[in-house]
Image (tube, rainbow, N blue to C red; front, side, top):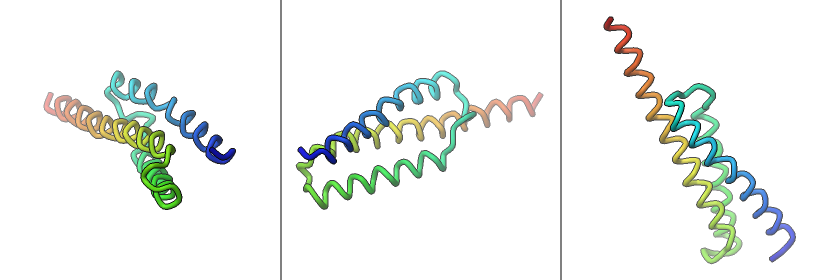
Length: 99
């Protein structure tokens, strides 16, 4: 493993460590406040580029595929919660408008 590979792995692990807290906050808050769907999509595009780079340079056996794919799953979960929370907010607005 090269020094560059080790540093990239550390970066991915550090980024990935933040997502469980973000997902938990999204789940509990039931709100889109403080979230940006555009930002989440940019992150997914970046991780997709990282996966493509790893596949091109190392093939599907590259060890970096694991943290990249895990991060994609975590960011996707947070994006899914964004849509769930947007529906919850819309339902609450509709319910208050009917009163």
